[in-house]
Amino acid sequence: MYKTAGDRTRLMNGPTNGGRPARRVIPYGIGGIEPPLEELLQDPITQTLMDRDHVRSQDLLSLIETTRSGLKAGGR
Image 1 (cartoon, helix red, strand yellow):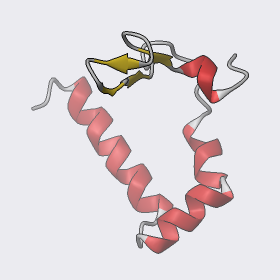
Image 2 (spheres, one colour):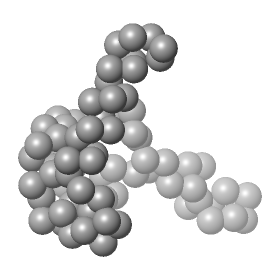
Image 3 (cartoon, helix red, strand yellow):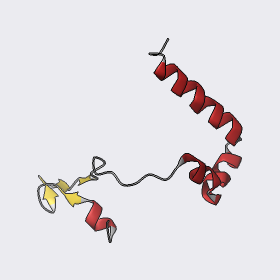
Image 4 (tube, one colour):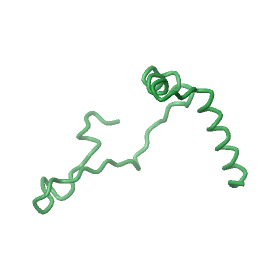
């Protein structure tokens, strides 16, 4: 999709904006294919961060299921 970080961002108003450094705009509206949650939970970096933060995958999955159920019920 993108070849370099520069492809993902664009400068607003040229190289400067009224003497201030130009702002970078990252187009979050351009989505890609998101990996399944199960794949993310198996990622070594994700596991390292979860270990650091004392988050168990079972607790995270339980929270997600509870949240999804609440959304389906209209937040009630």
